[in-house]
Length: 239
Image 1 (cartoon, helix red, strand yellow):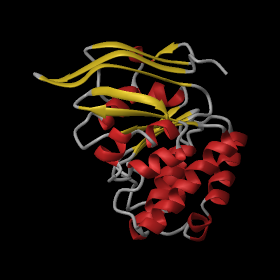
Image 2 (cartoon, helix red, strand yellow; image 1 turned 180 degrees about the vertical axis):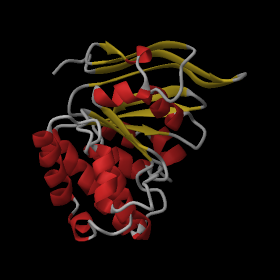
Image 3 (cartoon, one colour; image 1 turned 135 degrees about the horizontal axis):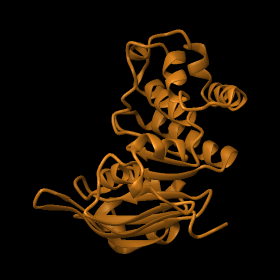
């Protein structure tokens, strides 16, 4: 596995005069789960949006499998294999579950791959299969999150960005979603970058973690190591 599968180097993003990201560098190898933890406003979601091309940085580099993402539009970034599940899910409530999944796979030209992904998603999320003709807006919060992830998987990503997948969900459903995220990683070897307020859960399910404060990475390392760091326990894990 190449260390250069995905790399962010010396990334700076400003919102006007406000420094949103300052000298951010991180990397992921193929098949890893990376967690980004930190308080609200630390810059975690901004980093994901910049990777996807929604935000253009002031300077820095983002490379994916040898491709400079900063030269690409968001739709081309998706075609190269990077998909984001945004905070708040943002499914299409007035479309059916099936129609939402179809939209997720719109860029796929290979019908065989589309069909295989469709089968994989419905096997992974049997509740979506049960509600395939149901309008997405009538699903529960947990089912909507499953649909948002399923829709993202339909684009056949190699790198999946998840922004607050547990938001608004009960602890039971949250644990179920994280088990499914782990299954996706195991079954498809998809690299995942995870932004999650529940730091304990994020560290439990990730291989590597980066701690962010006010637009900077202040600590990084193996998730287990960070989970046992006294400063992190005090600041983020309620210790």
